[in-house]
Image (cartoon, rainbow, N blue to C red):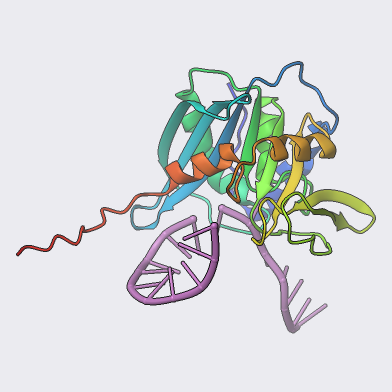
Length: 227
DNA sequence: GCGACAG
DNA sequence: ATCTTGTCGC
């Protein structure tokens, strides 16, 4: 149904991104925003698996409605700028199990704040033809001034004279988040929606819950003290 | 050639 | 991303 192609080389991967970037639309293009889904991918290094988690919630109360997960073997290395090719297979697998249809996707990673403007959030948005926002915990590319230390303060993420994202302090005294639109919404809307998803944590609810699920919970040995 | 480098 | 104990703060 989708059209994800697994490249056989780095150059081919970059060529795919150059091709897909032409489909990105950065203006608000959706009629309703009732549900939002957070997407994140964790890894099980030992078994060579990528574990994708998607949590759908209501924009009203930010309470989860549905959660799906999927594990698939990783066949693409982590290469800065090509993260999408490593994580999307697991994401698409998890997506197959999703019953509800979220109005928008919030992805852990960059939207257009990418060397070729095709971060994983943009890639997912284009593949699904759905609005998507990139929420990254660190910078991939671009320059910026550090925003104030209080929640809500922000600064522009620039690539030359082009604004590719917003550096947002999502909580007092914690490292800022890097927000960038991925597809079918504007920079301003991407930030507005992210702000609406913030509660008392650093990460917005969609990504925060997906992140929690994607962590491959280790079979931690309980400290059982026998008397 | 030398750094930088989402997860 | 993941590996990891203690430790600071609400």
